[in-house]
Image 1: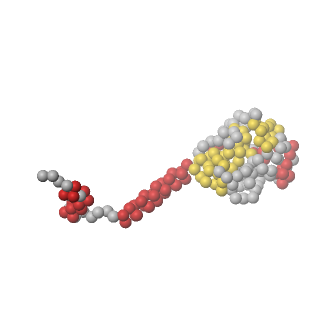
Image 2: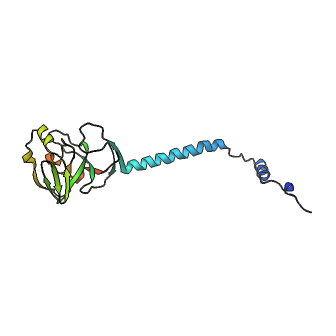
Image 3: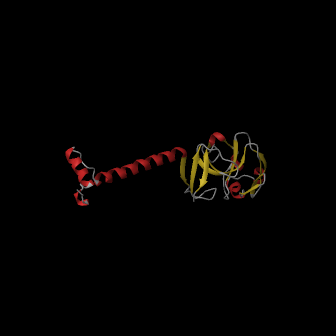
Length: 188
């Protein structure tokens, strides 16, 4: 006896009979509408939480910026090298309270000899153009008193801003590594 394809029970019919006989409710698409967005929300929450453990997004919106850029990502706990950007906590000075988070360019690290000029800061062969006059005039400091060679102490960083009027290590000295929040990366 030969069987035609129509004589065979369909696979769907077998599954439906199994569900009916065993009181199993099929999972409809309405459940997927709940589970897929829920899984996406949980995944995105985990990714955001993981990002904030190691990174910080910083928007610099004030008009008295000291380096170019508006948006930075800071990798927490990473000590910067010369030529990199870093977020640091300020120490108390005559015009700034302690603990203010600032982003500056690292012009020198421990042991480096940094030469401060009227228009630039030089470390070995790296030249950072950073005019000094505007900030010195505002702070009523003599430019000649701020220029010269500076040896960066152990566990310290010589930080500068490249815009005119920047208040930085040329005025308040080196930043110790305990004050470093992390290495900063320019986004915009």
